[in-house]
Length: 181
Image 1 (cartoon, one colour):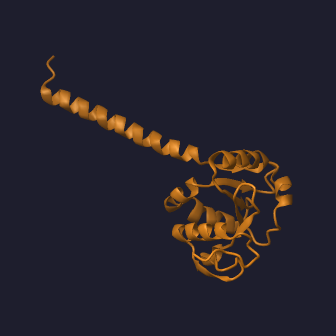
Image 2 (cartoon, helix red, strand yellow):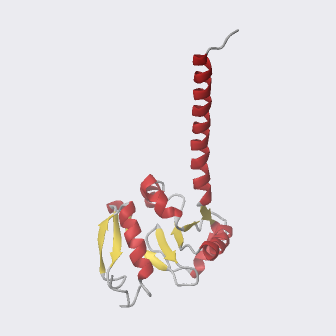
Image 3 (cartoon, helix red, strand yellow):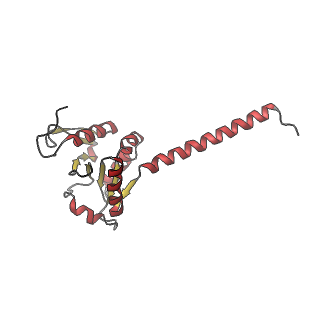
C-alpha cells in the first residue's frame, strides 16, 4: 500500500492541528488553576500565605448561597472574560457564613455587612478597604478624595479595575488623606 505525498502532508497537518488543540485546551486550564477562588477558613489562611509570597492584594467576597445579588454579581462580573486579567492579579477569597467551612469565624474580624455581597480589598498587613457595588443597578462606587466622597459609575471590568486602584491608594477609607492623582 502506497501512501503518497498528499497523504503524508495531510497526516502531518492533522497531527499538528491535534497538538495545537491540546495545547490550547491545557493552556486555558493552567491559567485558571494559577489564580483560583479560595473559600472558607482554610482558603483564608492559604490566601494570606499567597498574598505574602506573591505580593498581591487580597479580594474578599462575602456572600451567601441563596443570595440573588451574589449570584448575579458572580455571573456578570467575576465570571466575565474581561475580568480575568484583573482577577489574575488578586488573591481571591469567598467567605460564606452558612457554608460550615469556618467562614463564620473569619467574618467576626470583618466589618458587619448590611447588604450582600460584601467586597473588601486588602494589602497584606493593612486594614480592609470596602468596595461598594450596587448589583441591581449595575453601579460601582468610585472613591474621591476620601472613600465617602465619591460617585457611582457603571459596573464593568474597567470600572472595577479603576475603583480597585483608587481604593488601594486610600491610606484610610474614612480619612481625607488620599493622594491626589
